[in-house]
Image (tube, one colour):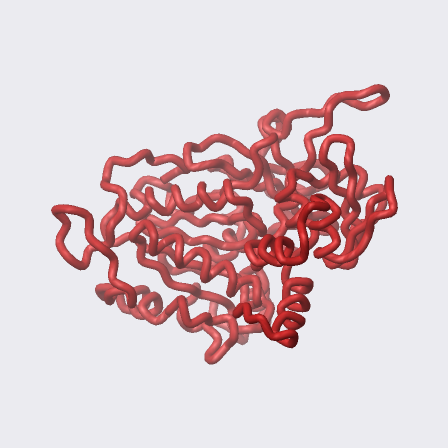
Length: 398
């Protein structure tokens, strides 16, 4: 976005910022966290955020807000000034520019025990008490029948401790940091979507479809855990691949954690990153962000997205499954990932080129050089991506 001083340009910028920045992102930056219990009691369209004794309700799909204890309300500009009255419009614009493209993490507020409150249970304790979905259970049927995931993919994720069955047939997908420590879980069901944190927050869901014996040389990053499982079901190259999910919106801490995982993968010869994001504007933003992070650590990267505008990888999987059942699609994984790339789609940013990805994976050929040269570390041959050396911490199942 260009910033100029003409009145017309300033008004365009104000309109763009108002539409591009979610009020929930501003609140999370200021230390507010989602009160899921109060939100569920009120309405899914009105998200209640808390910071100590303060509370703010976000409505209108993140475009508006109001203070239930006062008379404050308005758009994202008024929210920034409500939280810090010392800021003028110029300060507000500067703050909002830095938040463009960021989605709310929707991490849950840490409730303390008070009069009449039930003791809060640690998500890690809840996670450890749960077991993996078994064939025929409610969560198993949700994942295999409604979401179309193959039985063997669900079974592998459960065996690796990445998937548990929660109450009411919900599926829980564990998030861990680069050292393998549990930090929270994505929770999905037919009528439920959320994230529960033990005070740390989103990091990465991850699992291997190849048994996990070989070192990780290929990192696949998706937006949701079900998309990671779906991509694995479609993928022809599971050996040495770690399928991960950011769980949607990322905090600065989760971005730093992902970059650390990228560094660990980059230590392996011929390592690469597959940015398997949705075909929409948010996917564009993630693709640009992840490609830049990979470039920083010397990791080859390429983007892959579904053809259909707005589609995610689970939609692709379910469409193929329906085609198989109808007899119009052969029962086989994608022969080359480049087949699902949309031609001329707005979801293909110029900063990320997927061309080498399809060539390398379809033909097994040597990958071409990335468009922007990387500076080699001392004693390295020119042309080899810079990155951490072998022997670095394996961390998150690497």
